[in-house]
Structures are given as structure tokens and as C-alpha cells.
Length: 224
Image (cartoon, rainbow, N blue to C red; front, side, top):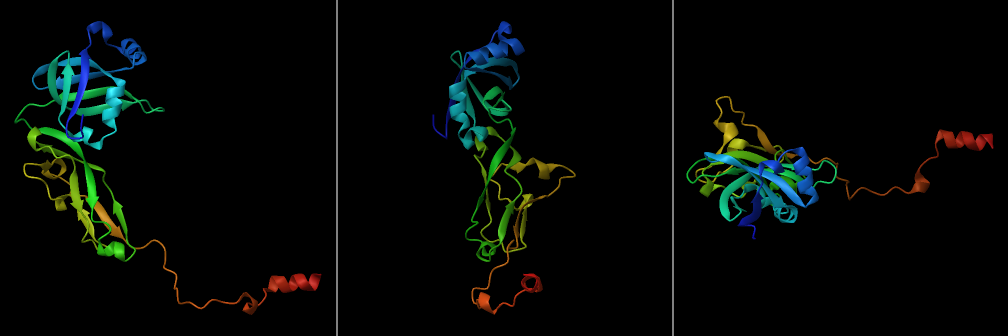
């Protein structure tokens, strides 16, 4: 497996292996219950070895790639659409995969990477880059699915902001939010002013001996 190709091995689950009780038994066997749906085919209930799934989940690209799922020797091309984790321990408890069909558009949330922060004029002036999104929902045909969207912030001055419409999209990719009739072109990043005032390095140091005693100190002396 590489970050450009993800392959999972799974087995078909019979009707007797479905339901809450059956799912608990599968997890005790280090298997994760899952389902593959869509693509004009009947949903397929499967189970995946937890170590294989956990290893894949370590890669950000797993969530925005076309996956190959081998189910009893039959390959399914799919994308992950939902993942349920244990609320306390974080291990995967169930996964939903959607089949992909060549030439048929899919909707996915892909990660966002902000590039050029260190080169930005605002950063040089001690500005703080505030990013408001970590992923964005897009639509495209499977072959054009990007691993992530890169947003260039290298030209941002203090007070500048970027909106969804400022993202340079790969060919054939659209942002669903902007396609809506009442779509909101929301802010995704802005360059804020410095949060801490700079200390004047040339300011003269004051000798503690030159600071007059406070009235409270004087009163204390009088009372001694």
C-alpha cells in the first residue's frame, strides 16, 4: 500500500453476522463491520481486519482517494463516506464506503492545505494567519478527484482575507457550496494583526534604586 493507492481486504457478512450483537462479536475478533453501497448495486455488508483499516487511517490521503476493496476476490472501487470511532478509545467501530462509477460524479470532502504562510507580508509584520476550514466539499468525476486543495496565502497582508471563490480549483472540480442558488462565499482565512504589542528594544532600563517607595511602604516604615 502507498499513499497513492489504498487496498483493503474484506469478507462478505451474511445476514447472521449483522446487527448490534453480531457487530460486537466481530470487533472481539479484531474485525470492523462495514458496508459498501451505491453504484446501482445492492449494498454489500463486509468486515475488515482492524489492523489494516487503522494503518490506512493514518494517511490523510485515505479520505480523498479511490480505494480498492477486495471482497472475497471481487474488487470494488469506492470512497470512504463515514467512519464511526469509539468515543473514548478512538478505534474504528464501523465504516461506510460508496462505490464509484467511471464518469459518474461523486461528492467528497477533501482536505485543505494552506501554503506560503512564512512568505506572506503579513507574517513578516507579526500578523497571525487564522484558517477557518480544514476540508471542503467538492464534486467531480472519480478520475479528477484531488488529494487535497492547496490555498496560496503567500501574498496576504494584515487585514486581508480569502473566500471560497479565491481557491484555484483543478479542472473539472467544483465547490458545492458555491454552486447553490443561495450559496455563501464564506471566508476561509484571514490575516490578523499581531496579538501582542512589541516591546521597544531601545527603551532605557530603569534602575530599581531610582524608583520612589510607595506610600504603602512609607506607612509601613512609620508603623514599625
